[in-house]
Image (cartoon, rainbow, N blue to C red; front, side):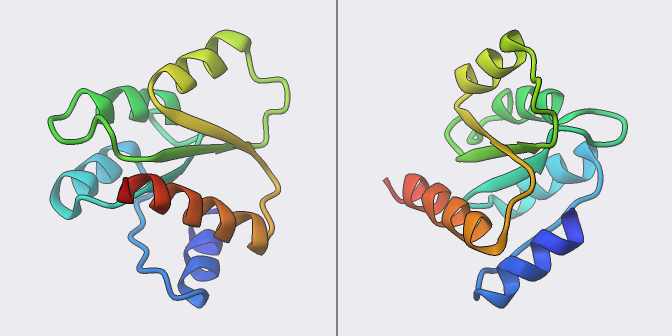
Length: 113
């Protein structure tokens, strides 16, 4: 998913940074200060919810717009609720090019306000 999303967004003119693990993503978020983050719920070592918790605990990262993408259509209500309480949205796979671009645009609009 990472490589596919990166290529799709880059084709639309977005500057995209990628990370394959939560630790690498957190480091990138600290150094690059992205305007928005799109991540998968199922990541190696730490899942997207754990990443979001760690991200929100970092100074300056409490308001970064985040979307968590998952193929799990039976997402536990407690998990969905916690994701929303941490200020992120949930999107379900598959995300087609228009879906992904609209999501990126929406997150970047949030970042601008």
